[in-house]
Image (cartoon, rainbow over all chains, first blue to last red; front, top):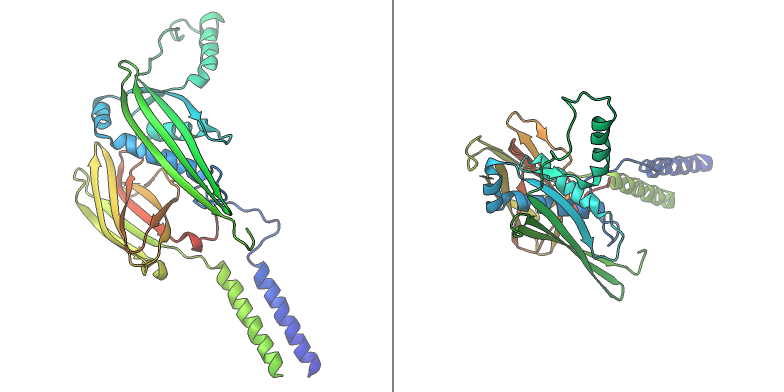
Length: 203
Length: 146
């Protein structure tokens, strides 16, 4: 009788261990959702990037003067560097890349990418000078389209700390500047607030 | 022997708890289809509740859609039935006229709704082909995988 009850307890413990370990696999690596909105810290994260890009793109393509402007043609935009005024090292080009991708996919705008210009110059030079390329199909210098608009952006943060609470406010402002007139045709901003409360237990 | 029984009970409760920890709960889905050419009329408007506790806090009171330019724009009104602030996450899925999903890499977005408040969620289609959409609402606390 004594042994059987011991055995029972052992079995139950084994079962308990199994069920507990059921949630964790070894090694503990798994694929997550790339679109997850779970904040890990008050630092700038992937969800913040996605929220900023989605909100600004939605705002731009539904702004009435922009709808009018893009109804007949697809204006050409050049993207300026983001002025990063936060305390963090953030790959701001990644934010403007996402904005640009979304805008291109909306079918309303076309873009000029100045970051790949040196490679383009190299390619055109080869086409012109190497003697390998048929002159009739070779691309000439001076044929590229000029941008109608410049997309500029500012990124700032306000960080406050009181006791165990850290409060970070992010503001991403984007402007669309008409290069012919210098007028800002559109502007909008996305605000994000992240609050971290370092609790007494854990944290 | 009675102590042993108690032990077994505790163990069983622990097992049950550990199982409950793995359970994942889906949220609320709102689906609507728009008749091409006329953004204001909707077909097949439906709300699917997969999470009763979330549905007891949040109610979708209105679904609206319109075309701005050639882009489908939608708005859903949410009413909080709770006294407390409810933290939610939402994500739009967009489908074309044939029901194919467009741009499946939509991300979850956080959304706060204060007690007894009515707020709206707006979404704009990623491209002009969208004619149908689905709003997914979920409780961030009940999401296990990131």
